[in-house]
Length: 169
Image (cartoon, rainbow, N blue to C red; front, side, top):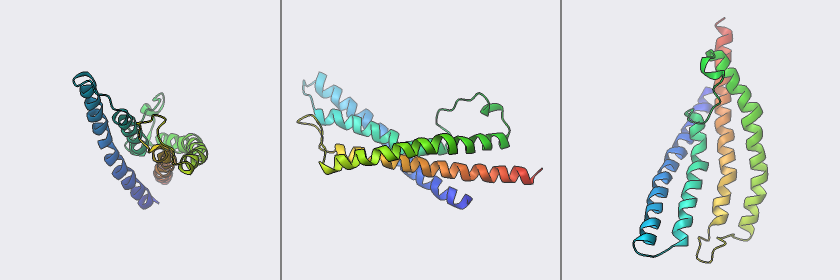
């Protein structure tokens, strides 16, 4: 079980680290938009939309990595002072009752959303925009799947920790 969790962790880390580079891309693209507009008086809708795409992809693809590294936002009322067993229980219950149902809902609603975008090969609403909206929308179900996988890895580790705590009594 922990071996499978490690494989999922590696997948999340690989995708997350690759997606982290999109933050740099978004910053550089935004810098180019500003320089082009205010120094040269030239605007580019495609460049502006590229910033949005890079930003969206960075968040959607790095979210599972953030969960893996505990870099996500956590309401730390009890968790910070809790024992290892209690933390494992909070992680397990949070995964089962919050993370997975939310991601299943996102997956369930985003698949038809992305499928409709693919059916018409949806592009930007702007005439000079990027013709790739259908690809961007396809990342939403991927995000949900990656989060479910990482949640499963988190749950596996929690179950193992709870088992170890029970055996150590």
